[in-house]
Length: 307
Image 1: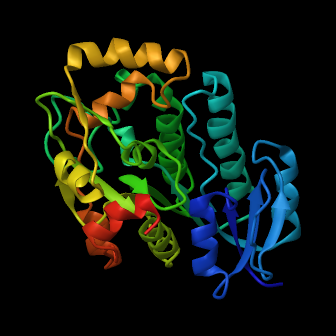
Image 2: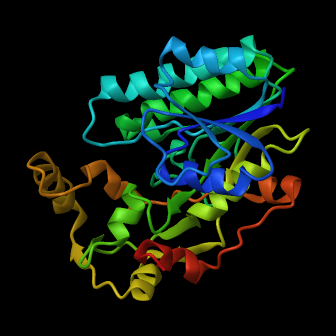
Image 3: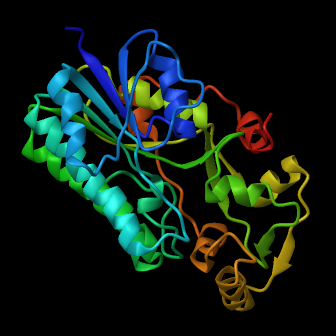
């Protein structure tokens, strides 16, 4: 029986990018509630909810050597209960299967957002920095719980090489997360008097890092950064954006009202990312994996335009 790699969340934009990288080198088993449009013929697909016990059938019937767990959802309009159920219960189910069926490698997609942008942050937070995002942004609480669950699994199951990846803001032509959506706005808000440094990483570089995490012997928690950092104003200039300057005391109540009436796609807590520092140090991953982003800063920024 051929040893396989399970990709949860394979039908998402990032999942498809990882599958495209790996399907010729590995036998891939994809798990997702959604169909995989354009699935390579050599990828075996299972339309399943990761929270359901039925995903055990995939592990029972196949020899699984590794898992890349990307089935993490972040939708600001979804209820906290649904978020928690999908992200935390789904991750718990995947970890249970990894332990029960003798999986040798587990790679979990987290995010540098778990640290949280804050006025007291120092430059370039390392992996040892506390995960404080929930203190200002409650909807990130379950993402932090996924990260902590994975770290606990690392210590409890030393026989399984567990890797927790925390990439900075992911952007790409097909990515529909908050950073990409924000940078696609023709006249985005900026907070008067603030021009924070921002770290972005191309979706294809994140896929490359996740694939590199499968290398035998690699384990631990890693920040993953792109080609560097740039002032928000420089990113706007590259994209040809003309931002609207809004006084920060007015911005939060105004955005809260707009979001409540579905006139804005961002909750007011997202304003922290364009006001405070939230940069991380990715040197540990770059050194240990001998890895660096292939896309330049200009290519990464312009990826939100589909270029």
